[in-house]
Length: 208
Image (cartoon, rainbow, N blue to C red; front, side):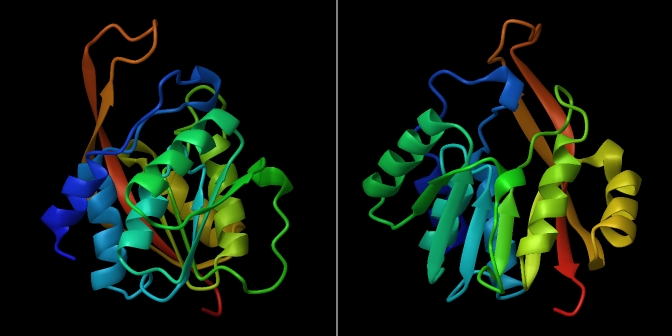
């Protein structure tokens, strides 16, 4: 599947109807999502015929992108039941299979090497300090091959140090810097849209 085709399909997905600020729910736009998964597959072979988990899957954009690119099995995990309902509808609309699980990631208990690749757009940690690092810690504990994740460019050194020193990553590489458009979704937003610089990271667990 070509990148433009993937972006077009993701652009039609339904997004949060009633976003929850405490969960930092922002839609992962089709531009970023398509490039993230397309890079994971075409540069590294981390999607096709792999078991892929989408952590904090929200409305399912990243997981659906993985399914469209030929993942063997996709698991979407989120604490919010309303988001999972939207993700289920989105998957049905595009006729792809997502295994959706309602769970707090901190309580996740995968045993053995079940998941090859984790993809995620974690909370930036602006409402709940350290939420982004909690996602990364769990992802590196679960993935056997690679983790793809978005983090604010301003946190680059902190993310790299934590991954390599604290979370058992064998390597941590910024693949590219992207612009993340945050739409005006909450009352405290003063501007119609805010443009945030984010890094697309690829982390490889030690021993992978």
